[in-house]
Amino acid sequence: MHPKALLDACADLLQQVLRFDHPADAVVSRYFREHRSLGPRERATLAETVYAVLRRKLLFDHLAPSGSGPKARRLAILGFHGPRDFLKSALDEQEKRWLDQCDSIDPSDLLERHRHNLPDWLAQALKPQLGDEFWALAESLQQPAPLDLRVNALTDKREDVRRELELAGIVAESTPYSPWGLRLSDKPALTRLDAFARGAIEVQDEGSQLLALLLEARRGEMVVDFCAGAGGKTLALGAAMRNTGRLYAFDVSAHRLDALKPRLARSKLSNVHPAAIAHERDDRIKRLAGKIDRVIVDAPCSGLGTLRRNPDLKWRQTPEAVQEMAAKQQAILRSAARLLKPGGRLVYATCSLLPQENEAIAEAFTAEMADFEPLPVGRILEQLKIGSGDLTTGGEAGNLYLRLWPHRHRTDGFFAAGWLKS
Ligand SMILES: C[S@@+](CC[C@H](N)C(=O)[O-])C[C@H]1O[C@@H](n2cnc3c(N)ncnc32)[C@H](O)[C@@H]1O
Image: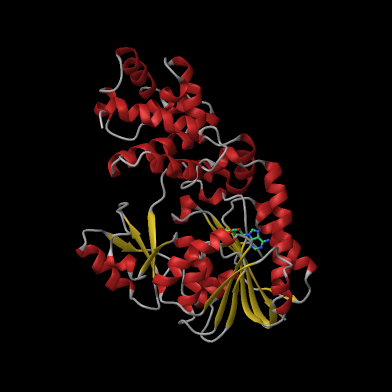
């Protein structure tokens, strides 16, 4: 595609994404379906340009007025993913001069908000948690995330899969915390690989793998993944159970559970029972009350821990929506807890960075439910020989909750708390 046409396409797609009426990944996918002739490189340029603009939107909104032409085009120029020479061959003289001016700005001359590119309410929520580290987090949230894979522990060994990928020209290294994880240095097309087709690998952030590990689901047990979605954690749990016992995958979205089915078929698991529930107090939940060994609640949340992958969320979320979400999280956790038998383990997790969705929910649950004893996550990690205390916070020993941060752990932002039913 000619550079001019590619830049026009970037501006066109950007205009659609910036309406914020749908998630950015859905708008990008729809655009690709409507423009089937786009090749893989053009698709990568389009997607990366849109994401770069979403990541640095406050800065680019600040720079755009000094340029010329339609605003979406100016933003596409600022965020364009590709060599500067290639981009410049699509620009007129005035645009080239403007781009040079923008490139020469010293970041230290910018206002704070143009450097962190976060909405004020979110920056205010993060700063007290992180102090000076806030800037390292802000910087990491403006970078793309690496591509992590989980090796199917039921069928394959991590090292064998790493070598198999290497033979296919894909460089992968073991993830530092999860024993199932591989981190790729590139973003190759995985679906064409035999390892993918036979269910030996699934795309899953290392942090997400750790959440499944915390449940320590065992052979022959009755386990519930309460908010299973498309089953990222379900698949990891089913493999940890060595395809024995019974693993229920519940979700209110039948559509999301549908996306689990082809993954399940690849994974060779036959112990998983997906079921759509109407709400967290569904009759199915009541029938299983007191019968389950382990329950994970991977709660619906603001998703602000995934800003590297979903940078539009910072512009689509609001403090009011977070408030509503917290009420929902409490209700789901309470209902899910009823499933457990005495001695059973409960894990509550989110991919949020906000204490309202994390520590506050866990603390309220502990205060309300006398028959649930907090289980320090640090103790589970110690037994699993994962990390060295830098993954946890809270409680007197600082080991009560899992807290993963992109800038510290190179994972998405995650939280987890655990309890034992007495
Ligand atoms: C964070 S996502 C789950 C991701 C999934 N566990 C994974 O690892 O791929 C949260 C899920 O909670 C589901 N959900 C929302 N409200 C729910 C409820 N009341 N009961 C059960 N699931 C619910 C959503 O449909 C969504 O799929």
